[in-house]
Length: 244
Image 1 (tube, rainbow, N blue to C red):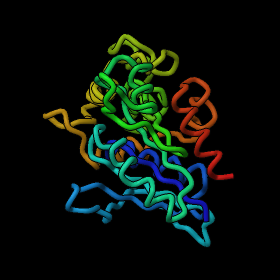
Image 2: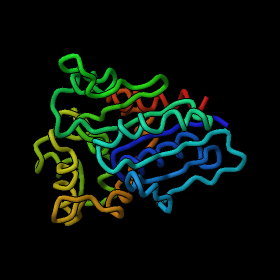
Image 3: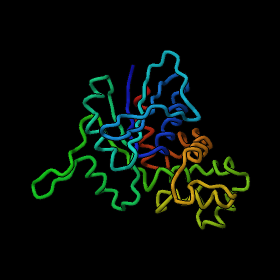
């Protein structure tokens, strides 16, 4: 069985990749394991139940998706776990991070991949062989914004013309990776229909994340959006290569 691991910064990315894998592979063709890091001495939480789950029958592929609970945990967890995972038959580890609130993509990616050295001292290690990190610009929600047909799934009132007139941009044609805080844009758009993406404290909740993830058109993401969004194409290409 081919095995791959995804290390992500939060629940949003975890549920999105879970659904994306299932839609690309087919529910019966992949076994998916969801975990959440609980702390160095607390192990992992595994009782995570997304709305859509894989129903494998003699699967040839296995994917672990680990929520590292924060962007600062993704690379350290990869560095800590990669030898153990490879010894268990995993062939690749892929991290998924948001760029937000950072602004220099090239610098951020370079430090993630090559590590950092200051005054001759290694501050952070480079990524090991067969590991990589994809940086969503600026947030993974920029991909959700770009899948503009999903808004009418949230509420029929959320037509493209309503969004353009209130937001000043067209999510169907404009580059949503240029938006500084796409998660807030999603929330503001949903609010036009008295819906929400975040709570009053600006935090994302499981039911809201799942609703959006379930509303996305994955055929559109796979066929069309990947050609418009470089980092999404990078992620999907890695999934395609794994599923061969």
